[in-house]
Image (cartoon, rainbow, N blue to C red; front, side):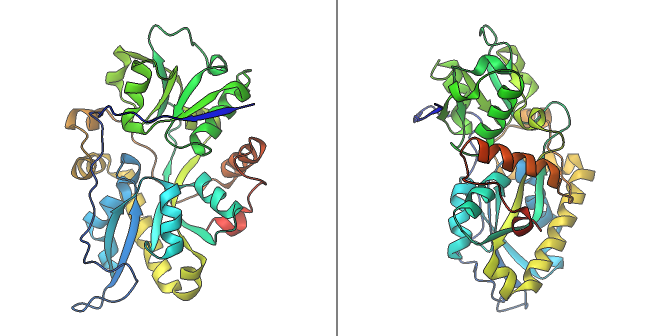
Length: 319
């Protein structure tokens, strides 16, 4: 039977991300501001390169063009963003698609309204790595090993299991260990895990580590990783707000895809990544279209591995 373990690391990584966000005085209730008739909107985001299009859209004025005064509120991931949207703390939030499937599986009334980030077609911005002298050579070799992921029972362990099984290994024998991305390199270096899921992965790490799999890219072709979601209540009660957000976010995605230098510039403003690291990053794909076939495959794997009870109804989950 597959095992999962939670360990806590005290090492502080050089890749630790800043907890930046808007002013606490900004309203997240969708109300209008006193001076301009704009609508105050709070968006839960992970302050990581994956959310660059959102930050860039605010910076470029695409949201203000739609009458939205956006506060970006850092989260720790989809597991935290989902209750934030349900409770009304966030009007919209960034979360990977499997987090949305898990929420829907438990009956939470959520729906994605735009895409956010997509896997690269070849080498990726995220990788499962081992030390250069590790005996692990292929994904199948991860069976029986300890592998770190940032969240248990989510998109990373699900896609890693899919890659391992496709390579002839038995993913039931993997022990997944929950380690935050900033601590993942230390965990594998110190031998607390045999392999680590690292985000971001950069070419400068190649001196010490080998990539075993780019788990998003290798799992299935053209996989969308995350999007922005809101509550069904918001969609029903304020469709104009949702439409304005969709318009601005789609403009942001298109601009980000066409302007990689601007993406790298904006990443430096909300993370603690060095300029050298940011220049080395393999950027995700930013696009407005969602590949439903790939997400159907992800849902099947999640149900097979017990992450969710049954395959998701994508008609109710996707825009």
